[in-house]
Image 1 (cartoon, rainbow over the protein chains, first blue to last red):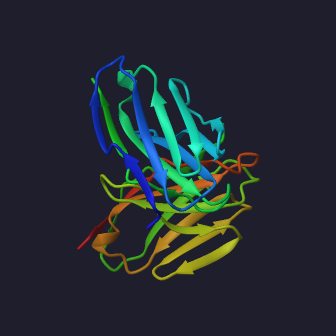
Image 2 (cartoon, rainbow over the protein chains, first blue to last red):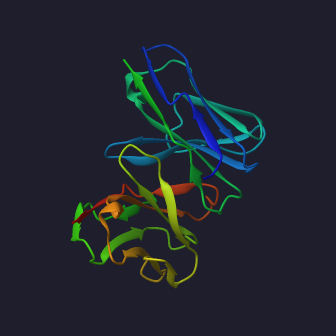
Length: 112
Length: 112
């Protein structure tokens, strides 16, 4: 299994609070991704990183920010959580842009 | 809008049968294609990838790619109840080599 750890695995919080999700990898892969998965929408890309301090937006980036200060860590921040951000969040990694992607176990986030 | 379309499903097959899962994509320039399996409550798991026209076999799984018709399929031979899951098709679109676009998935149920 790819060495990907997401934390926390579950979180319940209130609208308006900041939330940070962490993805840690031990594979030394260049690319890291954050996806959200919702019924009826499938997996949608939020942000991705192609190197330390190099990030770009995905298709559903509004309300989210990311940071990557080390190869192994990729953080996803919801500055002011809203109920529409209730979802399951998956981190993924790939060695290069077109190589197969592997997923972490996910974080189930509920915003009340 | 670049899309990956999968049969809405669900698909039900008897144990031992061949399950055929289909996926079409809108960008003729797509070069790489992936199939993921996702059990309920779990993260997506890579099971096959294919880059060239034709068939690629791995155990009971065969991926088939037809770039002229813009479809990719996954055949599961000798289906087992343990194959019951949601199967996700994904591709990199032209100019977006770092980002996978996913279909919404099709749920397969294998009846004992």
